[in-house]
Length: 312
Image (cartoon, rainbow, N blue to C red):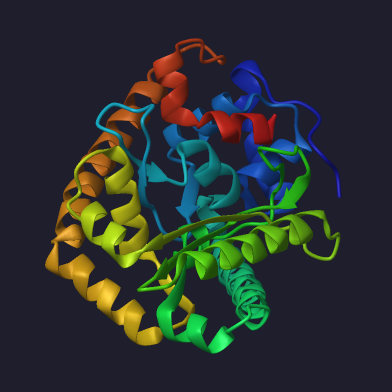
């Protein structure tokens, strides 16, 4: 199969059509890998032509970000959504595009399930390693959030922030909540989770990144007041989080607290605002004539800093 070496200028559309005719429906990343086209220009072309169909896969969900106005944005970003969660095709390739999109969607669900099972297995090992595992199972609940909870996990290789080691895509966001656990047991639990975090980061069989926090139920209740950025983030994580292991009754109590404090409704308001901002951002970005986004505010609409580093 032939490859398209370059798409530029007024030939972008014609060459993109040739590429899709030759290779069939493609994700944004697959097109980029086959060409030297500017990614922003490619995104604009795909979103401005009536001859090109872009099918989006998966879920857009709320992220809280200090760097954007109103602190609420949608994830994936416009860039990541285009590269990893969009299938681009011609009008006549609708059925082939649908099948490819479904295949990719099922793959994303499988990746998320596998990461969930890895996190569950590791935390079960942590529990079993404690001096009194039965007390941990009775007083502690392990919750997973983030990409995995939304079944939107990916395997794009990226550097872990603190060490620079390459990890396999989405991290494992784990919240560990305890009720009436002694300080010594909390310290032991923390040490065990940290050891596991380092081990699976360095182990070539895993190369997974664990982000975790341990807190008691009293702190959870304070955070659910939704006052201040950190409390809002903590509340959002508890709202989206899924049970991993530990005390299931404690997990149910936490979910009831989330409901009682009206967190889903508060997050829904923020998500609606973020959705409106996403559409406004797309309109502004489509109106740009340059292929390089020099304005910091406009760049933030297209990708986050971490995503920019990851893709470039």
